Length: 113
Length: 114
Image 1 (tube, rainbow over the protein chains, first blue to last red):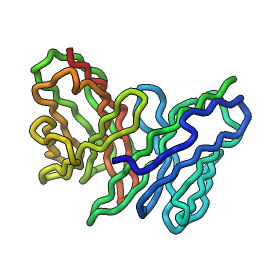
Image 2: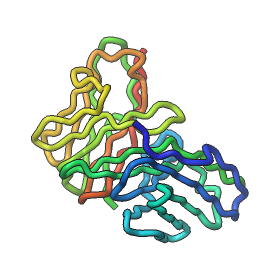
Image 3: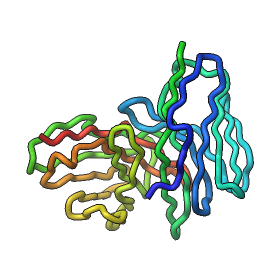
């Protein structure tokens, strides 16, 4: 079953603008991860934030995590046309020695040149 | 970064035949690999967790006799779709876990069953 729910489902912005995508989840997690998927391709890992972290940066990416609200946001600054892709949040919960990811439905980001 | 490959990238088969998809971790050993299924414009649904040297753990609703998983080495897991039917047409993606948290994904296999 899906845990993460992203919003908006689709986002269209102009190159150079910032893109903010949100993800909400329902159960306790160990970490939350964001992935990018170009059309018909595999997933690329973008960033991981642990449950005891509140904010993390990686290049033009900024991710926040609010465990009290069970939500996360991904900010892409100064967007580029190449950022056009689907973005998924995925929550990780440990079951015994293993962790598995539960993906949200995804957000389609279109960056207009 | 860690690289995971899948083969084939695309396969078209007739209804009733079996199809094998390979997932390889190219530059690291993966005790655990995962198989996902993705329908067009939808999310990834975990099908099963593949552990090297032991039986795979299937998610609820996934038929283990339909989707056979073998993880015979630390760098290779295979998914066999047995007696494939048109409803099995989908995008199948594998991942390999490195460490405790990070999964590296393969490029996916597009299966079309006629």
